[in-house]
Length: 180
Image 1: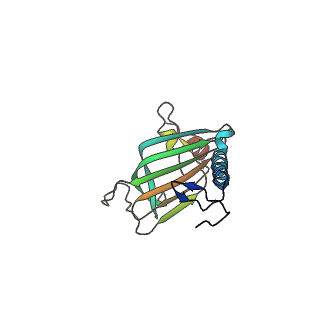
Image 2 (image 1 turned 180 degrees about the vertical axis):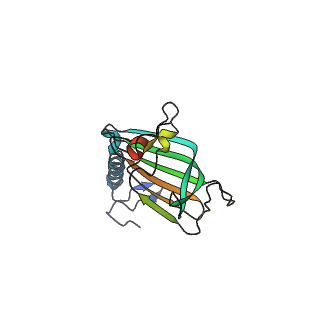
Image 3 (image 1 turned 45 degrees about the vertical axis):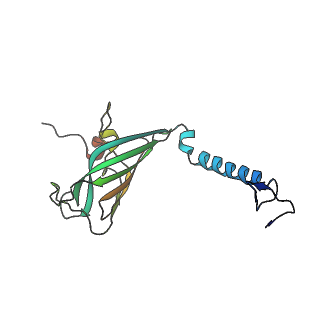
C-alpha cells in the first residue's frame, strides 16, 4: 500500500512508504542532527581545552558519615577511569568511575559498603586530585574546589570534582608544613 504520493518508489521489490526524494531529505536531516550533536558535545575541546584519561588505579572513597576526625568512613576502591577536562583558563573537571574493592567488611579504614546509596558533596580542600596524584611524570597533591560523589549498594562509585583555575595545594588548604 502506498501511503503518500501516487508513484511507488521501490527498494527490493517492496513499495516505500515515503514519497520520492523523501529518503534523501530524511537522510540529510539525520546527518545534520548528528553533526550538530557532535559539534555541541565537544565545546571544551574546540575552546582549547585539554582532555586526558587515566585508567586502572586505586584510591579511597567516603562510604558513610562518621563521628571521627575525618567525619566519614573510608574504603579502598579500584577505578576503571578518570577523565579530566581542563579548560583554557586552567579550571578543570574530573569525572571518575570506580568499584569498592574491600567488600568483605575488613577494610583498614573501617568502612562498609552502604546498604542504600550514599551521597556526599562539599567544597574546597576536601578531595584531592587522583589525576595529579597518579600522574606518571608529575605527581602532585592538588585539591578540588568542590566535589560530589555517589556510592551504590553494589559498591559502584561515581565522583565529579571541580578545580579552580589556580590549583589549590596542601599549603593553600592547610597552611605551611610544621617545622621539625
